[in-house]
Amino acid sequence: WQRALLLLIGMGELGAVPDEYCCSAAVSACEVAGQWQLAVHLLFEMSRSAVPINEISCSALIDACSSGGQWQWALQLVLSTMPELSLVPNQVSFVGAITAASKCGRWQTALQLLATMPQLALHANEITYNAAITACEQSWEMALAVLSDMPGAGLQPDEISFNAALSACE
Image (cartoon, rainbow, N blue to C red; front, top):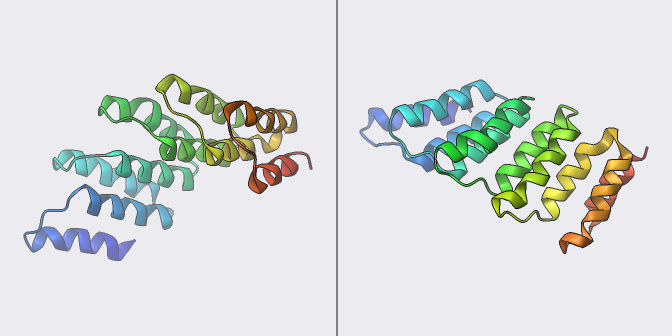
């Protein structure tokens, strides 16, 4: 992550202007290193420097917040910040926010996020449902309910779905 930041800074020193893709890659590097605060700072700097913030950079920041156990930040990004920036949250951003809630034992929040998707004309896929089932590890009843909802949503549960549900039943 440090080399990624040095490269980003070096671009400016050489007269190259970092774009949203370079900055998103730096945010992702911070996520891998568990530097969620620095990832937030980078997104703020993108805004301040007039570098466009897009769905990719927001999803990278959501993942960084998830890795750092910051489910509130991830939730705010999906439900508030992205719409304020005229960005439409997508399946990737929702999976990131659901995963962030899951890592902090917030299965109710994860299920609320899953329920919010249709209101935004987003269709949850197997990955989204699997993340929600995983979030329900503290409530086997809810894990099984989410698993049983998948066929009604036109989705076929897979091995990951069943493994997550089985883990909740332990």
